[in-house]
Image (cartoon, rainbow, N blue to C red; front, side, top):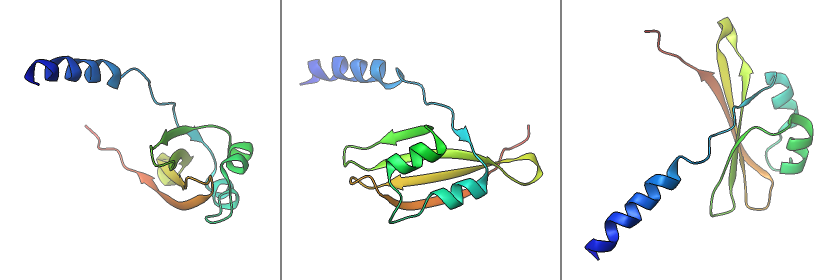
Length: 102
């Protein structure tokens, strides 16, 4: 078993960084709010209205899409959409992304 552990870990490490995340698409907050309705909006409707952005798909069938929006004082906000396995929006979350100045 120990002989197999190193090759498996090496393979996982090699595969872990092979796909870069797509940059989140910048969309006005009001457009996001009007377009995405938990319980009724579908993936197809959101994609048609907002276009593709960063997405993560889980084995459970759930999927998370992330968009950014211009926020106060020149910062960026983050808008996260959770789709259920049936393709319908379950939850949304939004907030400003804070950056630490060096």
